[in-house]
Length: 339
View (cartoon, rainbow, N blue to C red):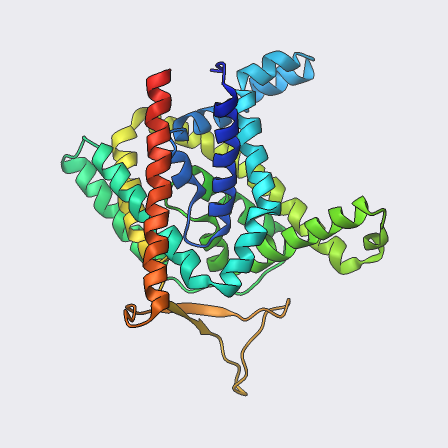
């Protein structure tokens, strides 16, 4: 499965990892879409499938090179490296813009998803009664999920492990946003903001020679939560990849139709023009979670006011999102020509 890669191939794999990491961080956006549109979705799934008992045996027998080649190591390493870099750089920048220019961020990702729907639909030539029904089912599920209300935050370690298994679906299923699922489960801020920031701060302190965090019980608890979440994510990623590789092999057309419908239905989640509906206490104050963050119960969507300049900036960002998608599509086609 492993094949020679040029320097540019390797560079773009890291870039794609950056995009996947950033996309996984945004509620409503799936890193799997980046993989699907970038033309490396099936390679990603099949490479993850190789992380199995045979790979473990090769590893424990000291056959490291054979194990590395068997799991398509250079591909997985570069992609995951890009994702990790994203979580500690791009995703933090994304947090800043979500706080300052939320409308423009949502508009950019809306354009990205809109473009991906066009890309997937135009390249899918297997519409029939079964695939149409599958597409409609995917559409209805996507729409239904977008109208669910979030649960309360829960730091029970067993539940955190479950969150890890479920949330990683955003990397393996295009259109199913792992971060949005975490919002529905009530743990988005805890697991993708507070925990990541705690890890970043810990690494920064260690780099400076400061180990005072060892005495910080709250920090250690947050790091424990992140460790359990990561373990659940790894197990979920590997197990889901085995299931998906089987589904893609035996029901590829129906699966693709479901994904097209699901992604279309999930557009409501990332509609840029929306207002947060916050939970209000009996005394009229805004309800906060254990970390002092506002508790969002739902989103109220509305149509843009075109008399406002910001609305036109948002549309420009949509076009930018579509352009990024088309760029990935172009690169994918060029790579196929070169192989």
